Length: 312
Image (cartoon, rainbow, N blue to C red; front, side, top):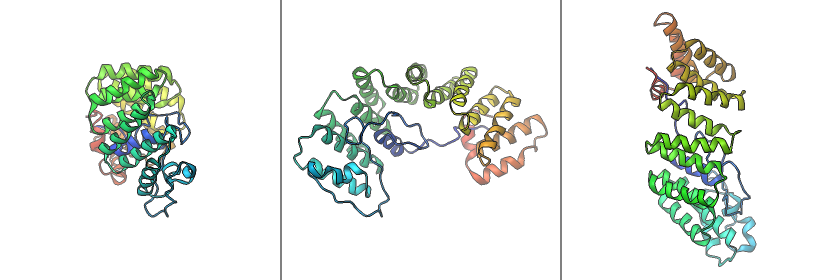
């Protein structure tokens, strides 16, 4: 039995939405960590609302942009798309808001899974101002969502050429390289992410997972330890490190991490399986069955997910 990532990777729509909107709290890493104002071309921001939410006025003129759902995010995704379309057709000469409208419209399309339309919007934004690195970054995320990794990397190369100080650019490029199977290049990118953003857990966590894939367990432990130092009250670092200790066959340390996880989050299915596995290895094969069965009632696919980590 083995543990995959303790949480399933978020849908591609969620990943690009997180990137474009600089959203927080999604299951997958959020690639951009320094949100800019909502009407800035650097960070089009929109939170798609429940379709049942009453629509806000879809005003199209530059003068009424503050009430336009394209910029407020109020209303349904359709309201936002329509509001952005109205603004783009209004004849506004405000380049910043035009870029933001294209970016928010791209986000709306991405939320529906229409990545080609999202890319078209971002390409229009690039045409308005080809010197905005964040637009290339957002389009790179859309290409990544389509698994068009070469185009994604091309856009990230340009984003980094324009602004080499953004750790999230290197993070996404590292993720793309890892998805291409170029693990060593991915680590080089994540090294830069960690260097630029040493207080961000995302870079350490992703690099640790890649070290796990390389079976470089000592470095994986070191990175998860940094995650725990930065976020000692969150369960994820402990459970992730616990599984690396299982892979190292250091069962005592694994049990300690799983136990700590359950003190923070008593129904963490991955940690429950971890405790059960350690008990079965240290005692009788049936030891730990109670914890494993409990985990399966919480997350029926947890065993399959854990196996993706390489745990036998």
